[in-house]
Image 1 (cartoon, one colour):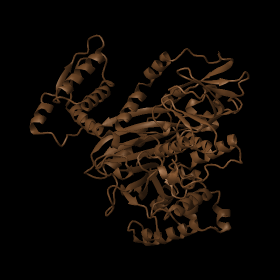
Image 2: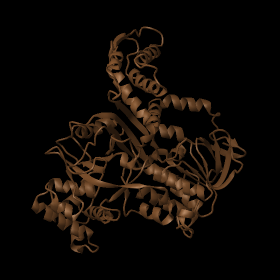
Image 3: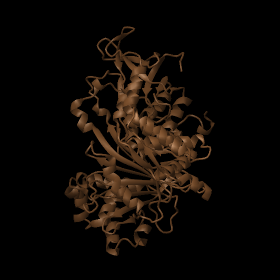
Image 4: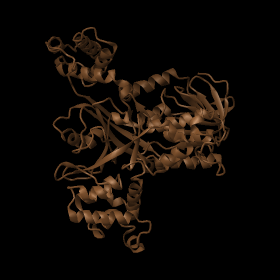
Length: 604
């Protein structure tokens, strides 16, 4: 795509949430905005994928070295440090940074059998499923791949394009673990079942929305306020988070967390004396004026210390408060009583605004949908979009203190007064090595697809959105709290009668694979009901870099970096960052995302 206009007030690189908020806010001031993304979809690291696109993403992560080499070979010769039209050219590292931000990808597909298969079909599918692979030849893996593809294809009468795609993916998975030279016999019975599972999911591909950085919106959080005030919320639909649970290690059960006074006194999982303790604490947390003596005594002490000493709250009730209400993501000892009370108050004040829930889930793609809503608002106010447009270089002045623009992979040059971009677009030389450890975090994540909801309480709807937490437990070898978000067709995340569960945990060990940190929680979800059949399971480790990683004395003064998605569940942090960046480059006199001047329903 070639543009006639080449000069802009702002160039924004990446369509992640923070960048998209800024694009909308700046465009609303009347400034010209060019919003560029080298991917062919919106969202960047916040993106949501269909099932077919998820399989492509998995392939990309596993072949990232080959892809990076191909992209490098296809690109023009490196001009880093050289001159273009009298300007210094500095590399954009988007592809390399993106490949390094995901580690330890493991994908599991479980064999199933189509409901439409007849007995005759079964005899064709499952007869003589052993094949001999003679690997003592040139290109043994290519030979094995072709042989298995043919053996599987022959099992299906006139295989469709989607069946062939399922077969190709299954075989790619298989050959990853093959020995390079040994001859051996392979039973493809399970592969036939996995192909059927894959085919069914590919048939419904667009009904899946896999969110790589799943988030929620606090009902009284700043993001909801901005969406309402600016009118951008009209582009979105939401579903409330109806239920919360805590995994109780001793009983190995999921206990429902009471979220109202009525819940507290109707639940049979909390003893009467503990109900009174809980109500006493919740009353204090909701108070606008907390007794100064309490804060003086406990304010800087750990939150759990105050719960134990002041309110005599211990055990599973304490776990529920710390992890399911205050949503502490790390070691409870690191959270002060003041911070714990603030988090608890924020949760309690969110209840009741939109029904009984404290959080909202954007339908379809989660945070990706929110990013796209801001992009739409930017376009309405004149912003120009270029997707699938790799950026190759930044253009800098002689002393490299100011940037004048960018050069795309196909040679187009665009100039601007300001350049804002996600961390993956930043040049490596601008990153502070001293701050790298402090400003880089890793989160282990998993996505589980099942035929039944892993967690459901008596009397509740299967399709309800549910949140659960596995507190730290020596018994279960869980070192940090593991959070699980369960979605369904009600959130437009997956087809009817399928259930999607996201799991996440902060990781202090970047080299440890996500599977080893999350598999115990996954096992407990699967074993929670004898009727649960897992269909797919994806593990991956995600890096989060803060913009504070950039050394301010190295980067040009008019280039601003935006942080990656963090490990927290809510969206207030990217909004807060966007507001700070907006003030820096637009000034305090400009209003951030003001209310529309006309009825938003009439605005095109």
